Amino acid sequence: MNTTAIATLSIFSYLISTLLIIRHINQSRIPRTALYLAWTAVSTHLIYMAIVFQQNDGFNFNFFSTSSLVAMIVALLLLIATINKPVEKLGIALFPIAASMLALDLNFSHKTPLVSHYNWALSTHILTSIIAFSLLNIAAIQAILLAIQDQQLKSHPPKRFIQSLPPLQTMESLLFQMLTTGIVFLSISLASGFLFIENLFAQHLVHKTVLSILAWLIFTGLLIGRSRYGWRGKTAIQWTLIGFMSLLLAYFGSKLVLELILQR
Image 1 (spheres, rainbow, N blue to C red):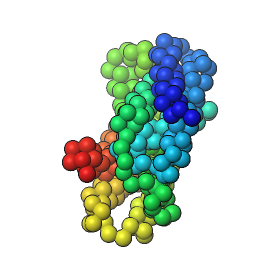
Image 2 (tube, rainbow, N blue to C red):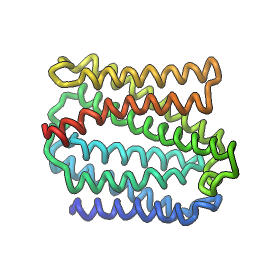
Image 3 (spheres, rainbow, N blue to C red):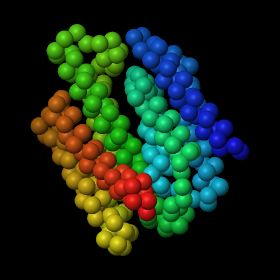
Image 4 (spheres, rainbow, N blue to C red):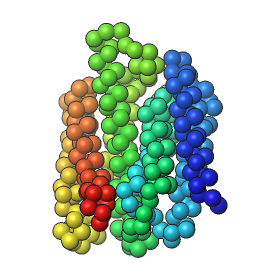
C-alpha cells in the first residue's frame, strides 16, 4: 500500500475535522462529521504506522516517529473520552499537532534502532513510556485550558471559546482521570527500566531516569494531595504542568539534542 497516500489522507482528515470544530465552536454540540473525520484520521494514522512497522521489520524510534506515535495515541485517547464526556472541542489543539507530527515523520524520518532489535522487556519499557507520556500530555493540555477557563470566568465575561468548553468540574475530572492512568503506566515504565536496562550510564539514560522519577513524584504527590487535602484548581494546574515539563525534558530533551543537533 502507498504509505504517502495513507498519511496524506490522515493529515487532511485531522485538519478538516479541526476546521469543522472551529466552525461550530459556539454551538453546544459538534457535528458528527467532525468526529467521523477524526476517527478516520486516527485510523489511517495507525494503518500508516503499522505498514511502516511491517516494511522496516520494527518500529523506528527516532524523534519524529516517536512524536507521531505519541500524537496519534493522544488523539485516540481524546476520541475515546468523547464517548462519555463532551470534550471533543479539545481537538482544536490536538488534531493539528497530530497532523504536523505525521507530516514530519513522513518527510524527515531516518534510521535508528528498531523495536524488533530489543527484547520483550525493553519493548515493554518503551511502549509503556510512550503511553504514559501520551496520557500525561492530555493532562497537561487540560491543565492549561483549566487555567485559562478559571482566569476568564473570574476576571471578566469569558470569550466564546471558553464558554463552549465543558464545565470546570468536568474538565477537572478528566484531568485527574488522565493523571491517574498516566501514573500507572509511568510506574510500569520506571519499574521495567530499573529491572531490564543494564547500564544507565553507557546508554545516556541517567538524566532521563532522574527527570522521569521527579515527574512521578510530582504527579503522585498531587494525587495524594487531592485525596487527603482536596487539592484542586491552581494547585492542581501548577503541579501538573511542572510534572509534565520534567517528563517532556526526560522523553524528548535528549532525543532532540542527540538526533537533531548532534546528529548521533
